[in-house]
Length: 187
Ligand SMILES: [Zn+2]
Image (cartoon, rainbow, N blue to C red):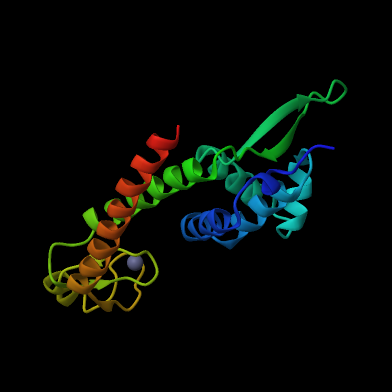
C-alpha cells in the first residue's frame, strides 16, 4: 500500500507549514493541501473543487499557487474522445524542513514588498475599497474620499505598520538563517 505524504512528515513541521500556507494563500489552500496530503494517490481537480465549495476557477488558482511553492504536483491526461485535459493532483512533499524554508522565503518576499509599498509619510489615508494610500494633502484635496472609488478614506498609521512589518521581517530572517544552516548540515 502506498503511504500518504502526511505519514512521512513530522507533525510539528507540518503544522508550521499549514500556518504559513494559510497566511500566504488563505484557509482554502490549507484545505486543498490537507486533502492531497491525506489522499493515497492522485485526486482530480473536480474532487478538490468539490471539497473547497465548488468554485473550479478558484480551486485551480489555489492549486497552481501551491504548485509554485513546490508543495503539490500534477499530471495532465488528455481524454481521447473529447480532447480535453484532466488534471490529477498529488502532494509532493519531500523534505518538510526544505518546504518550510521555501515557504518562509516566499512569506519574507511578500512582507518586503509590502514594506516597500508603504507610503513615505508617518500617517496616511487609505481607501478601504481599493487599498490606495493618500497623503494628508491629497486626502484634503479630495475631501477625504477616494478619487477613484468615492469611498470614505480611513486614517492609517504608517509608522506603526512599518514597525510591525520590520519586526516580523527581522524575526523571519533570523529564523531563515538558522534553518538554512541546519538544512545544509543535514544534507
Ligand atoms: Zn479607492
